Length: 98
Figure 1: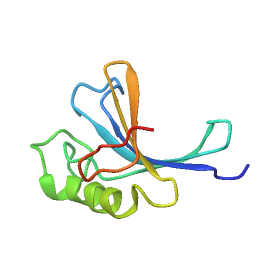
Figure 2: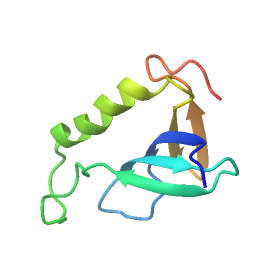
Figure 3: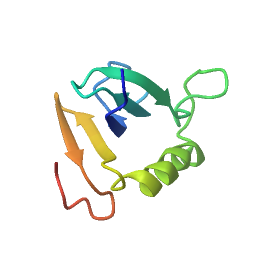
Figure 4: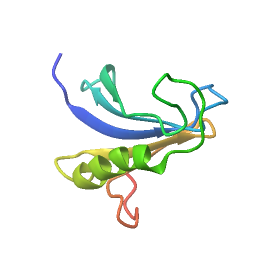
């Protein structure tokens, strides 16, 4: 399969109470099937993957890559939560839903 879509995802519908959100990049085929996910370090887990206080420096990794790539070459931001997915073409003001 060929990668046809790239999404930066903020997912709050994942079923883990300890972690309010998961952060990852999703590569998908033309039919929407997920080919691969790359997870960023979770800011609510320590190095042993145990719950800890929020670590903003870990969230910064995701935000830096998201801000660099969303809006280029069809790469979008997806915010999952409340049972729905919202797709955005840009993170600076998030004005364009796709």
